[in-house]
Image (cartoon, rainbow, N blue to C red; front, side):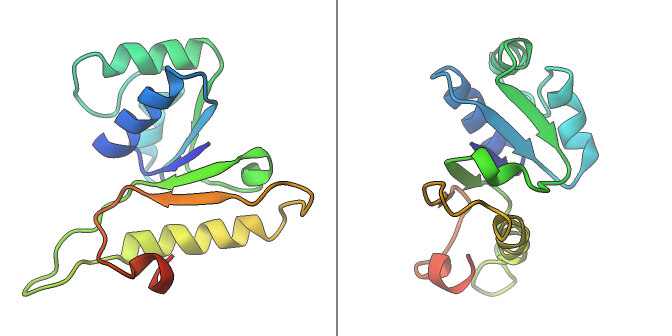
Length: 135
């Protein structure tokens, strides 16, 4: 399972899935967000989160990177957990969601077609129809 975005939402959701024995790879273009995960620390402050992430890292179920590369080959799900801040006036800025979608589409072009389809979910704040329009 891939998590795109390792701020509060991505790190917390990844930790929860680690408790259910899911292998998790966190992807964030900002190295200061992946660096703590690589050594089993939390990139955000939340009670109990660091212990869950450290246990996942120790058990080999958690890793992090700044680049997705060809890693989605074995993934069954990708969760987009990046920012979608409000725009001045109205609407949401979905530039980060779009950027992750583009990176993911490029990486999936090398995915072996014998694999089951990759499920893409979004935990970012989005407007109705954004999955079809942006992702």
